[in-house]
Length: 244
Image (cartoon, rainbow, N blue to C red; front, side):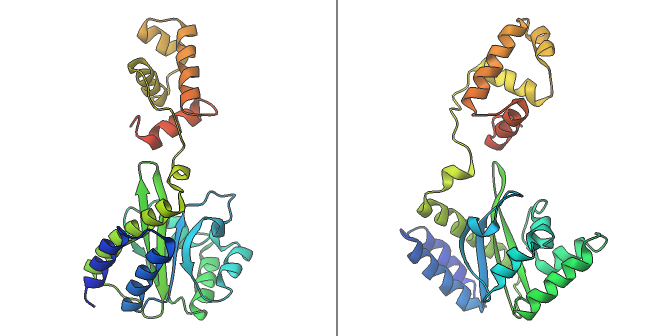
């Protein structure tokens, strides 16, 4: 299959101004490759309905309802593997990773049910940002087989589609928290020490300032980062790239 369709989509996606325009271009790409089903989603938290975070998708009739009703999201090997994947992978590859998992038989049953509905195999393309895993493109259907070059290009196309849909929907700000990240040198210093697990007493001795002053800096940081506590503050700082 010519890779020209992939290159054309990546170029066209930069000029799409509406969701309809973008999805028309994406549908043309999928049709060229004979790909029947897909989903572009933002990464859900454990208590969120995955359907509420779908940016775009097309699946076999009733499959999304079955997926949610049977709580497949809890054992879906592709979803579980996404947490550690740094590159695209096949559904079947993800299943093999969990062969020794206590839920492996249930995973097999889920995959068998998907197979009966026309989802014989597929690929997952993770989308990462500074905050870690932000979402993914999943696509599948019968007889889906991509060359290594096509996988690389589809990976780029997935990112183009994901970010374009987020931009059009006005959701980029929901991916990372809004913060007043104009931090002073001392605040960044305190933030890094918090990331290393240091207490107020330890920072006080190291910086030769009082505990009260350290706590004042911590409170200022918590306010600027909209954090609930020190642990949340460090997590947000890591996601925002303020500390490493």
